[in-house]
Amino acid sequence: MIEVFKYSLKDMVRNRWIFLYTGFFLLVTISLLALSNDLMKVTISMSNIVLILTPLVGLLFGTMYCYNSREFIDLLLAQPLSRISVYSGVYLGLAVSLILSVVIGIGVPMVFYGIFSSEALVPFIVLFSMAIVLSIIFSLIAFLIAARFENKLKGFGLAIFVWLFFAVIYDGILLLVLMWFKEYPLEKLTIGLTLFNPIDLARILILLKLDVSAMMGYTGAVLQKYLGSGMGILTIITSLTLWIIIPAMFLKRILYRKDF
Amino acid sequence: MIEVVNLHKSFKKNVVLKGIDLTIGDQGITAILGPNGSGKTTFIKSILGLVIPQSGEIKVQNQSIKGRDDYRSGISHLPQIASFPENLTGRELIKLVKDLRKGESREDELIDLLNLRQELDKKMGNLSGGNKQKINIVLALMFDTPLIILDEPSTGLDPVSLLRFKEFIKKESDAGKKILLTTHIMDLVDKLADDVIFLLDGNIHFQGTVKQLLTTTGEQTIEKSIASLLQSDV
Image (cartoon, rainbow over all chains, first blue to last red; front, side, top):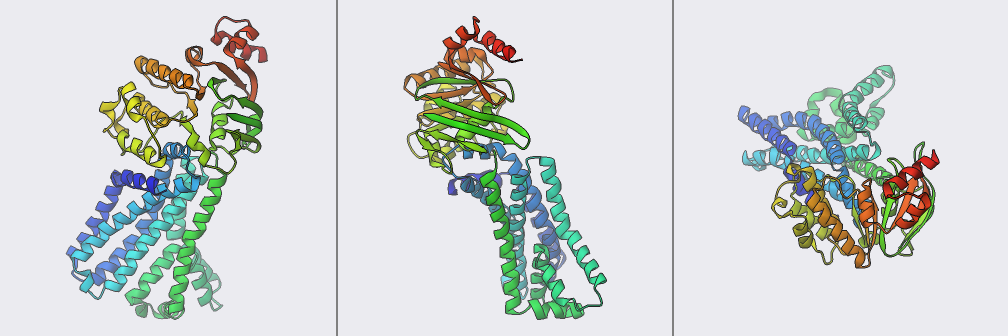
C-alpha cells in the first residue's frame, strides 16, 4: 500500500489541475490578505470559499482521478496485492495531494502574515482542519461513486449532484422542514439534521470558534447551547469521523464484489 | 498448472462464461481463441482474480485462488489495454512494480530487446501507443514466473519488436514455463502455440493441439480451421 501511495502521490503532485487548485487558493488568500490586515476577517472570508470549494474539488477531482486510473489500477491488481491495499494507496495519494494544496495555498500565506501571533489563530486552525476533513470526506465519496458506477457520465453526474445536495439543497430542505413544523419546538431536530451534512457540521464548528454566534440571535444561542459545549464539539467530531468511516466501509464492500 | 471446474460468470443479464471445465498443463504455449465477446478476457481475468465468478472453482498450482492474493506472485500478466499515469516515466513505473514484487528482475534484458532505452525517461502521457505497449511488456514480463498470461500482446508493435518478442516468448516456453495467450492474429498462433482452446459463446468449443485442430476440421491453415469451427456452429 505504501509503495502504491508513494507513486500515486508522485503522479498527483505533477498534475496540472492540482497546480491550478493550489494556485487558486494562493491567489485568493494573498488577495484577501492584501485587502485587509485583519486576519479574523480574512479567516471568515476564506471559510466561505473553503466550505464550497473543497467538497466540490474533492468530488470532481476524485471521480476524475479514479476513472483515469482504471487501467493502472488493473495493472496493480494483477500484482500480488489485495484490492484494499491498491485502492487505499491510490486514494491516499489523491487525498494527501489535496491536503497539500490546502496547506500550501492557505496555510503558508497565513503563516507568513503572522497568524500564529494573531487572535484569529484558533478559528484559523479550525478552518484549516475543516478544509482537510472535507477534502478527505468528499474525495472518499468520489472514490465510492467511481468504484460503484462504471459509466463515467453517471459517475460525474452523481458527484455533482452530491455536491449540490450537501452544499445547497440540504439547507433548502432544512428550511422547508422548519417552515412546515414552525408550531413545534425544533431545536433538537435542526441540530440532529445538521449532523447528517458534513458541510454544515464544518460550518458550525467554524462559526462557534469565530464567536460570531453571539451575533446570530436565537439561532446562535441554540447552537452555542447544544454544540458549543465540550459534549457538542465531541458530537460534531464523532459525526465527521463517521462520515469517513461509513463511506470507507461501503467502498470496502464494493471492492470485494467488484469485477475489474 | 491451472484447473477450472464449472466456471460461470455473467455481467447482469449478459452471460459470458457458461460452465467452463478445463485443465491446463504445466508447460507449453496455449492460445485461447474465439470471436469478440466470446469470453476470453473474462476467463483470463477470472484466473487473475480480477473478475469474481458466480460459481465454479479455479485452482492455480493446485491451490484454490478464492480470497487469495499471494498466488499472483507466480503469474506475469500482460493486460490488453496499456494505460498508465500520465505524469510518471517508464523508469518510475518499472521501479514501482519492482518495489511491489520483490525478487530478481530482468528489465534490462527486455528494455534492450525492445529497444526502449531512449524512451524510459519520457512521461507516459508523451509516449506513442507502440512504446506504451513496450513498457507494458517490460512491466509484465520482467519477473521470472512459472505462468505468463498475455492478452493481445502484439497490439501496436512494429515488425522488428514483434519478431523479437515472439523469440522471447518461445525461449520462455523452452525454459519450461506455461504461457497463455489470447490473440486474433493467427500468424502468432501458428508460430507460437502448442495447443489451442477455442471459446465460443462462453463454452469451450475445441481444446487440443494445433495439429488436432487441423485434422478435426480438415483444413490447411489455422485461420481456415477457425472459420470452419465458427461456421459449423451457425
